[in-house]
Length: 90
Image (cartoon, rainbow, N blue to C red; front, side):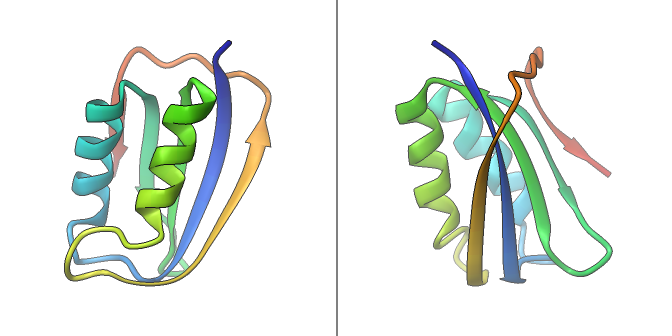
């Protein structure tokens, strides 16, 4: 049964290909959703998929791409949202 989660990643996560890497990882995991930079320097992710797929993405976010320095990852459940694919919001 699909679920939707929100992931907020804080640290040095902008300018290090975090959004692009998140889209690649989410697509590899079979997730749909979106990722965007926030004005406060964090990255916001909304992802829909099966619980184990979502757990894998949240776990990946703890490290992110090579140049990222993740300080915190906050995950919360959202009402189910449907997306056609996984997009970077600019």
